[in-house]
Length: 322
Ligand SMILES: [Zn+2]
Image (cartoon, rainbow, N blue to C red):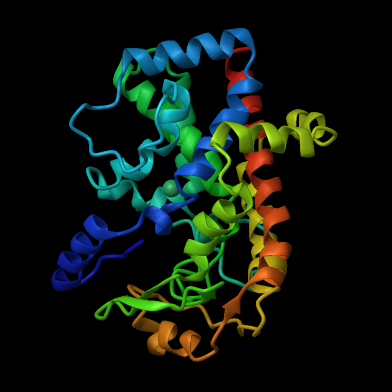
């Protein structure tokens, strides 16, 4: 999530990419796998066959280092986490995983928050869908486009991928989560772990899964939300409204339920958590301590967003191949 950093910062960033938990990159392994598992169970026969054929015709490079190691995943589910690994090979795809809608923005057009030079999650979804639809695109380009779509439909439903407070979508908000106090992980960039973004990507999910496999968690979500599924399935696919919906959840729940309220910052360009007058240090001093009460407010939202993402992804692919 960097913007044209100074060379020294670029080197540090490269280092931090190599050593980073992928938490800053979107739902963790399990979140993305759950979304893909739910989607897969709702694909029609033709869409399922097309998806598997496209993925088989343009396989993931054997030399790509894969962060998520869940065994025995089929090609569709395994593809859900590829885009985060691919960022190390194609850093220019980094901005495609999110859109920085500032807290306090009034609902309306979101194009002003999407830099045309880099793109953002809503434009990336549209352009990768276009490649996926294009029968003249190369087999590899179509397979990668499908992998991006599977991943980005997940990411857009993570509220902190559609929101920023000069804090890189909560990455610069150090928090304690149950018994883990925040520790500085990069003194130059002034980043901490746990932080609010990482908690939403990984920790809340891990806690409510409570040892379940991604398949068991996906099955449980299908049961919990079975009455809502038909509505989500029949809604028109509108990436902007998905982003706004997530943005609202960030305001009401992610930031709204914090034990100590965080003020809305005046939007300004940031390159690391050291910017905006040392935002992470200022946030650290709020001593945010997230435990059972926060988990109880957040988990139902995370569950619903994962289920919704899975159903919407299936509907999107079914509409390509009815
Ligand atoms: Zn991502």
